Image (cartoon, rainbow, N blue to C red; front, top):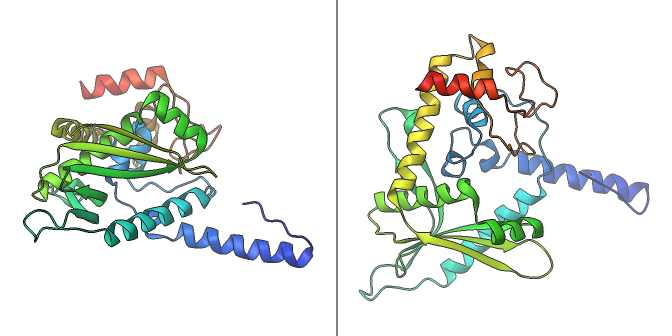
Length: 269
């Protein structure tokens, strides 16, 4: 957080307002969520997911919250606008839109196997699952050039599965990127809904969970090195990032180990 003022009183007020924003953001329901949600299942870093599955103590200082504050506000605004524009299907009874409704992606035999979340929007008329992403200009340019990435793609199909489980018949996934800067720019990535994409994502999560249980890093912290990170990790906002760490039970340096990845693959083979 950067807080400045035109004089000493202004600087003090800036610190106070900024501190309120940080405290409120860090204690918001999304920030306090402990169980893995659909938005995290496709994270490419297996080590990060392993920390999350074990509810491992976070080590990184909370990041700048303004992006999440704006994103949460944008989701609330979109919810309000689609609710205002609600209409009925041809039967005169069924609402066209399902707005910010929780869906069950999977109900497992144990609590940790359960997966549910709040789906931004489902349009029954076009049978499309929408997910809003408020992003910066450089990110928007990247998604336009390279697509949404594996994590966002899997998230979309997981919400499609959740809508299917709720009795809907989704046919398409749409990830809507809205630029977070002075000029409105919207980019929509879309593809047909594929249940298998969601099932494969769940199977990968289960494989990671099973392997972590076998490795028992709580009792054998040296086994953290057998859980790999991606070749090109995106560690900037990871709660377990600790640059230079040599003890993975205290934090991850964000460095991929080739031998660790090989050992991990051998273990699950």
